Length: 347
Image (cartoon, rainbow, N blue to C red; front, top):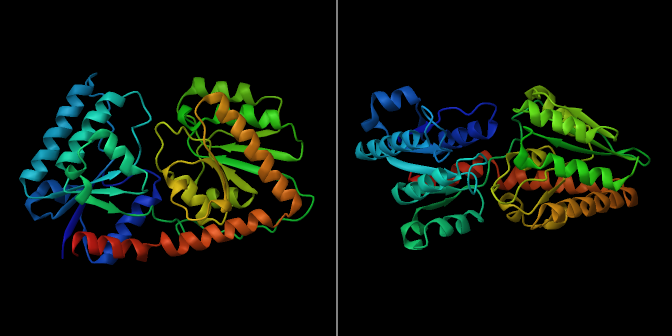
């Protein structure tokens, strides 16, 4: 039985990570602990690196952290471990872009396999390393695991005529998620029958105050705190649809969009990598933008369009959500991922 280790071993509050591990186990591999990886590295067949390119300062310097990760990467390869790098974003969302790009180029050249969660990742790799022969044969296309069964099940409420149209944004409140752009767009819509809830914790107190001030005197409900796992599905089910106004400069994949679809909900979002891979773009509301002002305009249009569809037929959004759920159930299942792991790693 092939042994697979993961770095990091766990990702806080990231249930997709456990879905990936579950799929490798179903494929016939043994997931081992980080402790066992360091204890007996020569007995490990594969090592999956997640967010390895996210270089944070160590002792006040990015260089120290970069060198440490470079040495560790090549030590594992020296021990005979086949390294698998999972590409999550175009670049990390923090202020370490230059160091991240340097590590991403190292990972492209040094990894034995490269996991892409969406096909748009290929253009990211090409921008980093022009010579496609360096990485083309390393690619494993692995759809983002769904969240069906990962959270406490909540029955979806039945929409009826006359109910308020409820939009939800959930997730950590950080600048790259453009919550401020969403608030400005929502206020421009000026429709008392549309409600917006913004739920999630703010890492920055100054950004929290900025969001609170921006959302004042509007039909916006703020829940600026960590949302417990048991509350997530209830929160999603209470709303008509989701909205994710992400930054398209750094964002490639979105677990939140996958979660929304796994809960049977449609959504509004820019056409990032995750969104582009859906086969039927009539099941959600997508847009493209090149500037912040255009982003705001596109959000206004999308909110108005989805509301008009809801008013015309209150079941329309529900039907889109059901179709997205069916797609998640089939194409993003643990069984589907296990088949891909088994073939790609010869398990």
